[in-house]
Image (cartoon, rainbow, N blue to C red; front, side, top):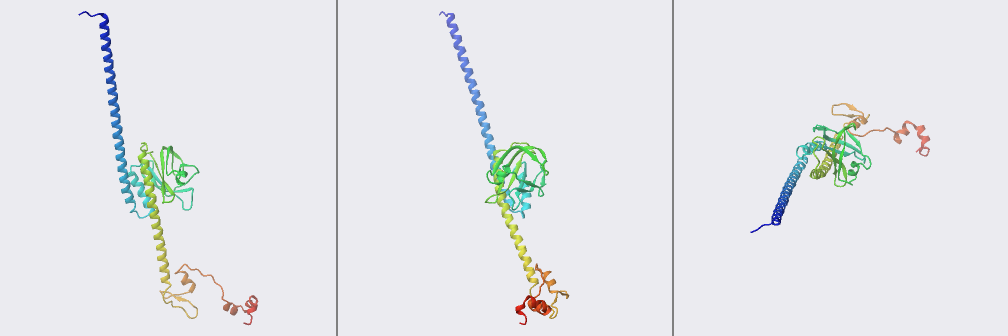
Length: 298
């Protein structure tokens, strides 16, 4: 058999084509493998994120149950900050409420300082500026507001750094009565979507528990006032030894007290003195006759 140069060239070119095709197939397979690895990694990341979110939701239920056992609104807020850090994985968090009867003045409760420790913020006050993120949250226009990187202020209003910040409304069932603030100043880790959702649910739970505790405190105050009033009534009840002449009253220790003094020390009553018509006519007959001429001689 005889081969020509042309046949050899064609055979060589065919081999090169096959090699190039094989190289492209290998590249495609490598790319497909990399994409598969990326998809698998993304899927694992999503599954891990969902698992962590589910775990945080489970912890949120436990936290709410533990907070429901607190004995006062102050203890509720303090414990909420501790549990939010320990069990819900929040970085820095603070709880603020509107002053009673005010729509633009906030009062602090408890929070987290720059090093991650618990901080008493009950003496802190802050004004809510119109169209601010705080204002939008409190007006229920944005129950959850991500502020992005924003200045972090201390209790004197001085900027001490920057951090990603987010606000979640605290609801009483009808309106926002305050908000929970959270930032990542301590760790610097990005705030995730799941963290934001947990914070929103945390704010709602806190609002329900705070309102419930507030009603309970008001009820206890009312009961205490009623008990004190009952004691006063009992102290003024029964037979009172009173002088038939000067009208002084004898107390439990045997001392004689003026009627006014005795009652004032045992009740909230106060006396203002005057004269009845009979005494006025008896003590000041001339003046009485001028003031009541029609009754003169009656």
